[in-house]
Length: 271
Image (cartoon, rainbow, N blue to C red; front, top):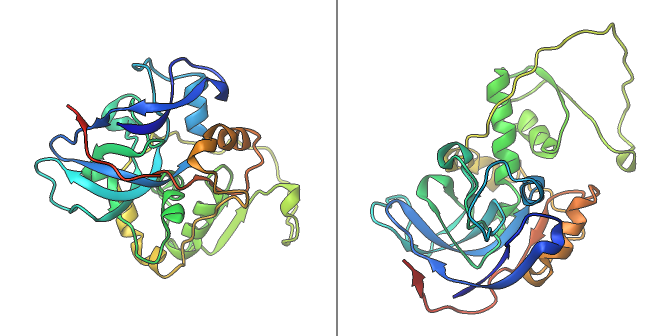
């Protein structure tokens, strides 16, 4: 058995409870990963309040994580037991719905293709802070057809990742972004122009460890960094408080849950 946070009904953060659940078994092309750090995203509490599609309850929330491979299913080629990995475990395009067992547990089972090798000089807490934000930003650049050296205006919750990628990976010439009044200090540009109808495009996030692997040199050289909220890390026992902080909308970076694992385990799989 393992410790996990889960909810048996939809609603506010108070529906979350900590308890013991079976450790899942890795099937073909899957990894069993011991979670060392996890981070919270707005999608985690939004799905807890209003799920996109019905899913079997109870649900263990969470997308982003970093940890160590404990076991491999048949056909796994890229990872060995003991490898340090990280990624976003929720692949909505492939699954069609939310995974029932998310990252707020001591162990997770996930598809090999969703993971990337964690750079040695990046902490588990830092690695767990990157996947959803970085993958969303990269998807946005690809959907927009952004060309190297171009200029762009960034609005939204993945701005810190998009800003770094724009300058380091896409070599943007001019990057403009919005900020809260609490972060004033940079040069301000105040421009008005005639109303127009700019083209907008909606896309669904493609989750893949390949994106994270492509960015590994930028992480290892620290040209791409995780931005962690100063109040983090929250211990695993304080997940409800961590969600409370995230849901205020005042977090200044990723909200981290660490450490997750508190004891050694003998593997007792749920088959």
